[in-house]
Length: 158
Length: 158
Image (cartoon, rainbow over all chains, first blue to last red):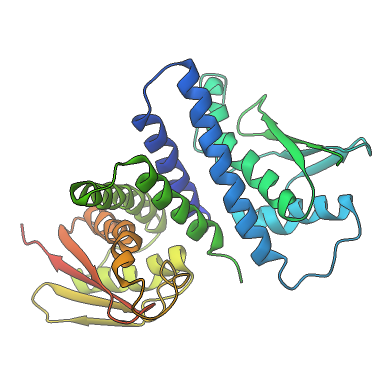
C-alpha cells in the first residue's frame, strides 16, 4: 500500500526546499543537516506524546527502546525495526533493512554520499521521542548497503 | 489512532520553516503560499501515480473526482471527503467537515486568518493529482467554521 507515501513525499520536498534555499558549501550542508535534525526532534516529541497517551508506564530503558522499534516506527514508516541490539551499557543499535526514506534512492554505492540528508530528520525523530520520555541521547545513523540503515542511540546518563 | 500524525506534524514544521526563513510582509506571505502550493502539487503528482498504479481507467471527470474524495483523501488524511457537489459544468466543491490540517487550531474565529497557510499545500495536492490524471484545474479553499473546510475545484477546459 501507499500508506507511508504522503509522509515520504513531503519529507523529500522538505529536503529539497532546505537545500535549494541555502547557499551551497560545506558549512551550509552541516547547517541543513542540523535544521532537518531539529525538525525531526520536534516531530518526534509531538508524535510520542500522542502515541503514549494511553499506554502503561514503561518498565525501563529497554522497554522504551522496544516501543520505539515497534509502535513508534510502525506509526511513521509502516514497518518495525528489523533488529535491535544493545551492549546493556546505554548503547542501542536499531537496524532497518529497508528504510523507507532511503528506498527511493537506487541501491548501490552511487548515492551513498546523499544518504546523510535522508537520515538527519529520522535521527532527530528518535532523539525527540526519547527526550519526551525523559531519556537524553545522541542519535547517529550509518548506511553501508542501501536501503539498509543502522541508527545508533547513545544514552546520555544525567 | 495517530496514523495521520507524522504527516500532520511534518506539515506543521514545513509551514513554520518557510515562514521563519522568509522576511515578513504582504508580498512575502503570498510567496510562501505559492511555495506551499507548489510543494503540494509535486506531492500530489507523486502520490496519485502510486495510488492509481493498479486501478482501472477512469470513466469520466466525475469518476476521477470521486477517487480523489475517497482513496486519495483517505491515503493522506485517513478519512474521506464528507460531501462532494458539482454544477456539472466543471465546478466541484469538496467539503471536509473535520479537516485534519486545521483540527489542531482552536475552533472559532480567532485563528481564521491563519487558515490559508494551512490550506495551500492541500490545494496544490489536489491540483497535482488532477494534473497527473490529465485534468487541468484551479483549486481554492475556504473556511467558514473551523475545522470544516471547502475546496473548490474549477476544471480548465483545454
